Length: 613
Ligand code: F6R
Image 1 (cartoon, helix red, strand yellow):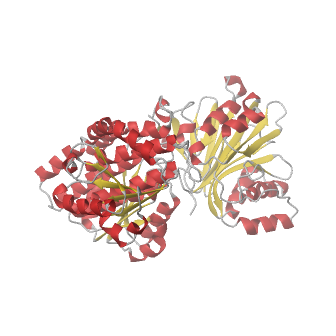
Image 2 (cartoon, helix red, strand yellow; image 1 turned 90 degrees about the horizontal axis):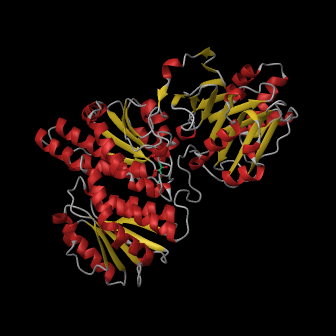
Image 3 (cartoon, protein in one colour; image 1 turned 135 degrees about the horizontal axis):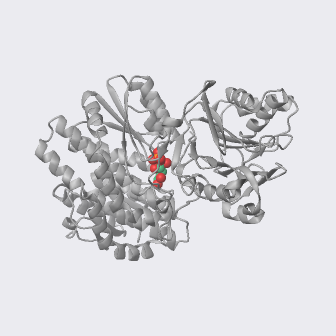
């Protein structure tokens, strides 16, 4: 879970590759941020200079004055430790014995221990605990045996098992960066007189909008005026694979908000609107609905927030389309995939399209003949590329580590799909389906209204909750699914322990912890005709044990009694309630984080995209 970037530029075009690297790397910080480093090939001398350390990129750049160096080519890395503690020695880039080769890597080399043993026996000196260092020594070893660098790269990659996006610089070829990809994401940004390799799009956006997604198994190199890609030793023609990125640079920056998380919460009205427009003009919805309709078994998977979106999909498949389904956490795929067959379909949900557990679940189901529908926010990412149909959300880049706008755009796309299926299998008639889709098209406005109504209350509530160490979040029906996501948001950004349960389940154990002033948040979601009395009962149970009772509810729950604090999100139908209830809860998590002095954009121990199993 790291970010890599490499820049090579013609010195006469007036750009500083060192500064491009620094800026590019800072835009990848969301991929990991415990240490970082740079390898530069100095102008005139082509000496390899390596600057790396633990800590934030900004501090490393200032400490070594990285921007001040004149170089033609350089690579950089931001790390989320997998092998070896986050120390200076373990930070990338990693070099060879002669200090002429430097490597940055995202992923995990599974067979690094045996490769290391083999290389040590041959006299190579290792200094780090990382899996990555085998790559620089392997590359060196092949060069020592007379291979040219491209052949050395081919031979190196042949020996690697695992996942990787790799960039390599070699001091004897100061205008070239070698790269290779297997599973971990890698793109090339095409410039005029320069080219960039990177883990992700935001790092190239200030310089170019033209990109190529490097595919699994491809290797190659970039030079300022040349790109070479091959697969299985055959040159690949990449010209027809260039995509033009329409995201604005501003979109991937904070846009005036103190944190990305807040900006992304506030952006939801717009991105929901864009997503609904995309859905109504995209034939992938129709294709996906046909696949669901023709399959006997529906499985749904995702990790973290994407799993929570999957639960919402499963709920609406049953409520609207009368189709049972099984939603599971993607890391559990090994045993769950054994029941997959050609008459099943897997709906794989991943905003990044790169979460390794979800990708592996997809592959396991696919191997057994299942059809794959994916929901993703990143065009051309791994999961969509391996799917039969992909429905794209249009949330734009999400930089805050905690998923917010991608969650609501996922639920929007999935609910839309459930309605489409309901229309095909006659669970609802065409008129009803159109009415529901029209209701969904108001999701953006519902978010705005809810945030307007609830923001002040949420701020006051955060003040009173910030001293607590534990919070329960309870709900019934859809409310319990919203509770799972709310509890995840609270715990990951504020570090307050928040736990979600279906409210009815709270009597079966969790209530044992409740004592004086223990905060319990209830999510009161429609239909109130089903849930009002039962929720009232759960509130009484908690209140009589001294709990502080807080309700986030639609207006029809205003008459609940024994409620200490009611956050009224306005009225909403069952299919639109998630857009009224979720944003104030996201905002609560954000406010708690800020009041407690946490960085909501970069919660400790977390990374935006989890690319290791
Ligand atoms: C939580 C969060 C994570 C992700 C999870 C899956 O706020 O962001 O739990 O939801 O890592 O990521 P994707 O959707 O990229 O597969």
